[in-house]
Length: 316
Figure 1 (cartoon, rainbow, N blue to C red):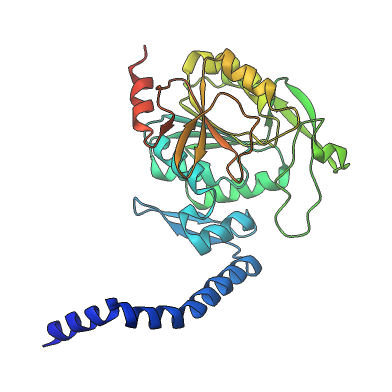
Figure 2 (figure 1 turned 45 degrees about the vertical axis):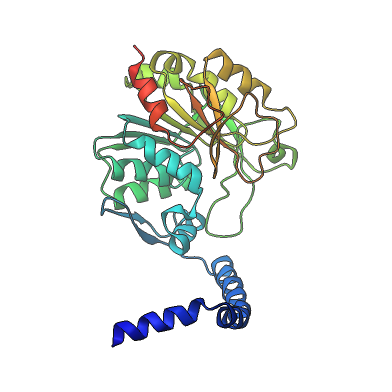
């Protein structure tokens, strides 16, 4: 009897007339609920959180260490922050031995790499002292100190002291749009300056030998200098590079020239897949991250990175 009643109710639910009445009645409530959820997420931030991962391990983000990122993950889960880029990196962690996180911020991607792949070695570079302290707290809290090396330096095309332009902030989180780019909007708006240590990655790697499989770069329009400073390692190890490249008046021509000199193929990371591109001076909407790949296929769009991984693995 209960089964028959359930079948009858389901048929009623799908009836054209009844479904129209119910859907039209419920639509305002649905819209209001979505609006309220958005307002709650916008106005109520979560400081510190635990996020379950696919392998049963929990990612723990400390209090006062990346509140903006933590809050997004709390309300939306692991895909709450940069979902397409996050999925790209997570798929590449599994086939990598060493991950270099440039502009590590609070360490989200460094932690994900270490927790999802217990054999992965991670080097996290974060030059801002206050942000670096939060990175260290998160690494300790997740018990991955032995595999995540935190470096309080910036990567650049030159080693030595450098000036970082760091806009002021109002909340607990330090401003994360600091940059070493002298022609940046931060510099033009007279953002406060912070003196930091900088090093070429090629020089760093000579002091700490490693084979680099995967690199993430998020340095606010300074990526061309970072790439230039790791030229030798890129040409030797041919790592996959996930890089934020923001739209700028200069059209990112220097970055484009470097990528071409490495004989790399850029793929624009989008919800529809990885779109093969030949330049960076186009309107990207909300998607500003690219996969710079040492291998490629003729396909205009790739929805599975495994083919690129296999191609790279097959290269001598």
